[in-house]
Structure formats: C-alpha cells, structure tokens
Length: 429
Ligand SMILES: Cc1ncc(COP(=O)(O)O)c(C=O)c1O
Image 1 (cartoon, rainbow, N blue to C red):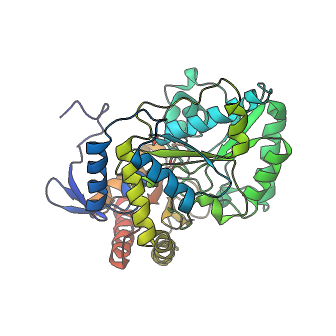
Image 2 (cartoon, rainbow, N blue to C red):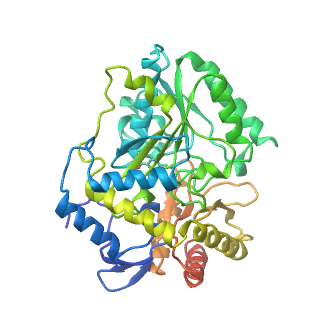
C-alpha cells in the first residue's frame, strides 16, 4: 500500500493486534511494545472493559457538542476532580491530541492577560530542546529542529531559553546556569511582553527523558512569579503516572498555573487531552466575550468513557506505584548492563520514561554523525530482536533510545528490553 503513510519510510510495519504489553505482527511475531506506541499505552493493550465502556458510550451517547454534559463526560470530570487533579487546577478544557491541548493552554494564557487589560503580554517562551506539537504555533514554540524543516519561513518568533541538560551543561552550577539564561531571555524580550513559559517537567522524546537538576523548577516558578508570567507544564507525555508520580512536576516543590496532559489519560484507547487551569486564570476570561473555542471532536463521549475506565484501572491496579517500582528496576538493569559501555553516555529518566544516550566517544560526548543514522538503525535492530523502542532527539540532539512501556511489564520484560538494546548496540556500532 503506497498511499499511507503520507511519506513512505521503507518497508511498512504491520500490526494485527495488541495484547497486554505486546504487539502481534502480521507474520505472527510478538513484539514487546517497550515504547508504549509513542509513550502512550500505560495500562497495556486489549483491555476488554475499556472496549466495553467505549461501546456503551458510542451506542448511548454518540456525538454531542463538547460543552454539553453527557454521562461519560460528567463521570470523567468528576473522577478527575476527586482523584487525580491537584486542588488548585479547577478548570478543565478537553482537547483531542497533545498539540491541540498545548496550543489551547497558550491561547488561554494570552486571553487571560487580554482579559485583565494587559494585551501586550502575549508572547510565550519555549525551550531549546522540546516538543509541544505539530501545529504551526506549537512547532514554533518548541525546540525540535528536525520537525521545523521546510517550515521555518512560516514560523513566528517565539523566545527560547536553554533546556536543562545536566550531562552537557557547561560549568558546575547547572541550576544557576539555566535560571540565569531564563532571566536573560525574559530581559531580552521584555517581561511586560510575556504571557507564559511552557516546559516539560521531564523532557520527553525530544531530549530523551532529560531530568532537570533539583532546584531548577522551583527557580523557574520564582522567576515567573516575579515577572507575572504564567507557567504551563506540558505533561502530554509525563502526565497520568508515566514518571512514577501522578504528574511529572510532582517530583519537585512547585506548581504550574496550567497543566496539559494527554497520551496516558486515555491510555491509547482514544484521543483525549486535558488542559487544566486555575480559577484565577479562567475567571477574568469568563467576564469578557472571549471564546475558549472547542475542537469539534474534543471531549468525545467515547474518548471520555475510555479515559474514565483507564483511570479506574490505573487506580484499582495501583499502576502508578508499579511504574515507580518497575522503573527503578529497569534503570538498575540498564545501568548494570550498559553503564560502562564505551558508547553509552548516560542512562536517565524517572519511572517508566527512560532514555539511553548513545555517543561516538563517551569521554568527549561527541555524537555520531547524522548520516550514520544510528537512532533508526538501533530502532530497527531492536525490532528484529523483538522489542520496540522509541527513537528520541531533535536531529541536533540525537541517538537517544527512549523507553516508555506499559506500566504492567514484568521482570522478564525488563530482561528482554535490556538484552535487545545491548545486542542491538553491539550489532549496529
Ligand atoms: C510533550 C509533548 N507535548 C505535545 C505533544 C504533541 O501531542 P500530539 O502528538 O498528541 O499532538 C507530544 C507528542 O509527542 C509531546 O510528547
């Protein structure tokens, strides 16, 4: 079939079905889905009770415009408020994908300042290594060189500040370095022009599970407060348990003003992303005639029913605690097997979002040339060995194998991941 995907990338990979943490391929081979698709499937594939909930919502609720209440929507919102959201994030806007969610959060921040009579505060600061989505605005605010190719001439200017990358940070005061850089970015742009700052608490695939140094986020919060800049946490990948806490920001002592979480919310069973905000942000917008416009298919009843059931299963099976514990065992196993490998610069991450950075020289941290195509060769080699890992990086930042399996994997699965990656490294390098 040459019509799909839009651009062909070689031999198509054909999947017949998903079962737990595994994909069953067209030829009957079973592949461990150690990337959870695109770091999405947290409760595993093929859960009959999610399918039943979706079927019921489809039959009984079909399609209803997003702002209206339906039983599935109400159930999901009530569950989110009761069990999942931090107390200060009281307002809920639902979108389909993560790009829509992040762009909605950016728009809400801009509308907020317009509503309080400060329309000049309309710029959003992003970071040098990041991915926030595929729309023109989220592409522009993000720091992903490879995904900007062919678009640069159409992208608007968004100020950018360096993403913490402890492995490659110049000097020996990483927190000071990155916070000073943020202050400089704000100064150059003018604090009165900036509505919000957007960052992933732990960077997803673009940086390969980059964990900032302790103190960074508290410092960012203080600087944002001082300049009346709203803090948007993009937790499209890290939200709903992926890093071993409900939300990634909870590894530190700060709170965002807006939080966007997608992927794991409905566990891959349906497209759904939540944009969560404080009353203080939403109330002034409510006093204007501005619209926080919905996407036609946002909060689709079937997607809400899927998410409601996924969250119920996550709580019932204590899957976040399991992600934290399994994540520690996975990291220990990866470090034991690869920690001294001459081409492994670092094994990093939190919970079940981990990255293994591959370099040509472990001492100098020099990367392999782009033309060596190390990432895609490793992904293909791991697939041959029965494990799907996600290729991370931005083009400039590259050769990071990202691991983000369902939270249900067991110790045999951990062994499979480690041995596939070790074998692939030896075969490819
Ligand atoms: C942190 C982050 N933000 C936003 C997005 C965009 O989400 P989507 O692809 O659902 O539009 C992604 C997708 O990978 C992501 O990881």
